[in-house]
Length: 370
Image (cartoon, rainbow, N blue to C red; front, side):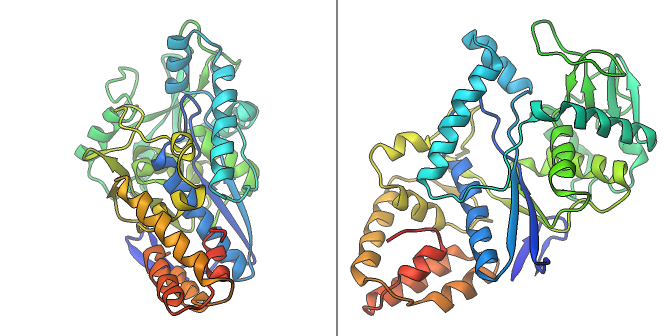
């Protein structure tokens, strides 16, 4: 199997051991899952299915960010407790993923379950000399870590721009450098608060994934993923703090899924240009939604069009009409091993079905029941 590695900027062999340790960044449960989320998790689901087909055992951890700026802001707007908001959205997300035939993951740990782990992790970063205290907060000092930038390969100007857009708060007056990022921060009035050696407060955004990955999977993981919008600052900062804390490599392979657009813009909660999975499920068969997602290569950003669902539904009927069998199975395996080429896999199944060969095994490898 060969997959694109974001950090190495090339398609390279992916050669894990018998047990593949994977970590994919999960949702912040303040709103429903949209097609952009579904594209991410269906991609890693297909990867897991092929790895299992090759004889590996997969351990995929998908966290839940149930305390951060976004969920706290939304809870205030709705006048509900942030954990009550999270509980409802997590239940809906799990229903949506089950409907799309996404395999249950190894673990779905919540950030609030990891406060002791987070506190211990911050202590490790401080002890290693890579963090400092200021203004009641603890910050990571990027000047002490020469590998900062090795995941995203961005220049300083681009980093500062994205940090400002994505919650990095480069104008924080307590920072030594605008690119330094918060590990622990004082809680604002009405926000959840925990005790720590550095004062009462709550975790920064990036720290939970490092602490959870270490707790659930160990020091070094085989593959880390998420949407491409997480490359910077989230994954860059996560990598830096993890390696600073442990002194060991954090991730062997970085794999990111490109964005789904609507109206020419990235589908995102902040813009409100969303197509929710649960809305589609009211009128579209789940297998057709999954096929529509798989018709796009994971590394290519694409524009959602309802016509994609009609094309997927017609494709599904052609495959079912071809009956059961192992048609195109080897071709699909080869396509998935070539940087998870799902459009090529669908084309191979189309050809076999058109020739009257049953394709149920190949479809099942893609997680599409016939």
